[in-house]
Length: 304
Image (cartoon, rainbow, N blue to C red; front, top):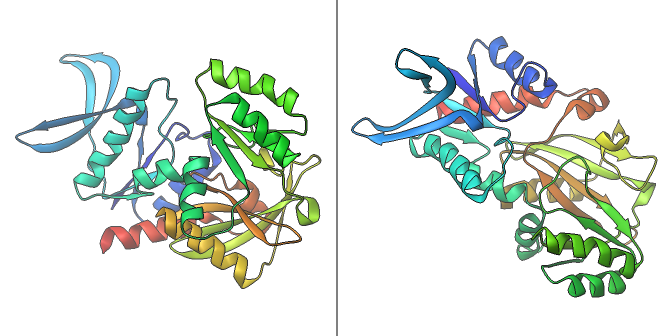
């Protein structure tokens, strides 16, 4: 079986990609690196044909290789600089799905699961507990939200590792950030700051509808991202938190994801989902390599 791995970080320098490549090979299958920014699709008498091309000149122009994987693990879509570029790359991955090739995670589920607002919108609609959140393109609506929350967190809709996320308790200071967002044509995502038990939050890794392990992450500051210096440790959580994680993945249609959950004095809150989670901190803390579960699951799905 040939299993494709698609994304910007699919190279031998990325440890998560190396884990996937190693596990695919260990099980006797062939890994195939697919670069999202090098895909092209032909629609003709041959049906849907997907190629990976390079700018390297050959006798007939650029080098072009037809891609015919049995399954695809979706990681990233590469650097996106334009709306049409985004929709094109989404459609390229969708082309695999239209050919009957199993993609994990399905591309539209991946899209919504990696958008903070879309994620909370779907979870809230299904009755799951999420933090109080205001989303707007009007900076004075954001200003009023910070006044209402008193302590608030401002986040980009699409970001990772805690970059570009900051805490404010002064609405006038926040207004300067909102002015920048307005000038950059970006929406404002304002969330009530949660006083978390233990000063950190939990990441539960879900694969195939099951929690395979949990880590608790606490940083030197209020941020609990490993990329921001937080230290992950293995954690045991109750059935309620595990059920929240599984339901979150199910609602968003994610076959694998990291589900971030905070515990407060009142209740649990689902913070976000991560359909392209990085798992090196989790692997070292918990002693479980998600690549093994991901590859085993995709092989099972591809054969079904």
